[in-house]
Each structure stands twice: as C-alpha cells, then as structure tokens.
Amino acid sequence: MRMHRVARCGAKECSLAFADITRNGRQRYCSTRCANREAVRRHRSRTPSAARR
Image 1 (cartoon, rainbow, N blue to C red):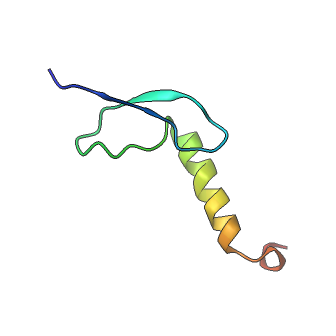
Image 2: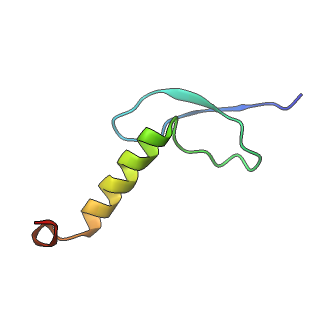
C-alpha cells in the first residue's frame, strides 16, 4: 500500500485539500480547472495589459 500525500491546492482562490497520488509527488492543484486558472493568471501577469486588448 502506498502512502498518499495530502496537500492544499496551489491556486490562490482555492482552499481545498487533495491527495497527491502521482509517482513523483509533485501535484500542485486539486483539479485541472484550478491549474488552468493559475496558468492564465501567471500568463496575464507577464503580458502587458495593452497587448491583451
């Protein structure tokens, strides 16, 4: 039996906990929705607001 790691979601707006069942133990988000939301947030923070218009 493999021990699961319990972690808190890495998304700013999410406070859910999840069991990291990946082999390497590097899961950061509770769902793909949270992962995508954070990826968009990071991308928008790097892109100048004038370029997004």
